[in-house]
Image (cartoon, rainbow, N blue to C red; front, side, top):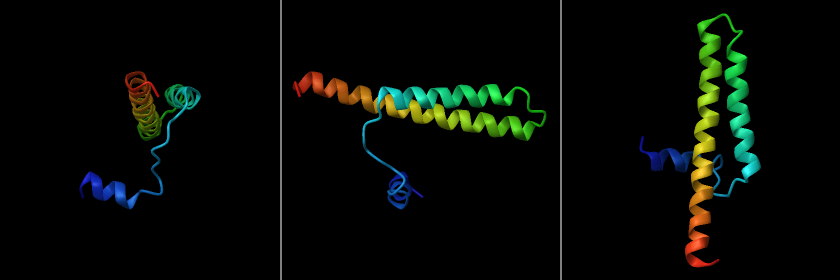
Length: 80
């Protein structure tokens, strides 16, 4: 499956809208919480689950911040 096929099959889950700084901060807080929650977990599977969730939140934050930054740069260049 290509990325385009995947994106097309998940288009209802995806949005091209801008994330606010608060939304990005919230994603980073989720990642931090997941990492802290993993510390007392005894099982490797439980730790892996928390690590996985932290990675997803971090990836979403990075993508959102890049999109936000790209839009800011575009506005600076175009004067919009």
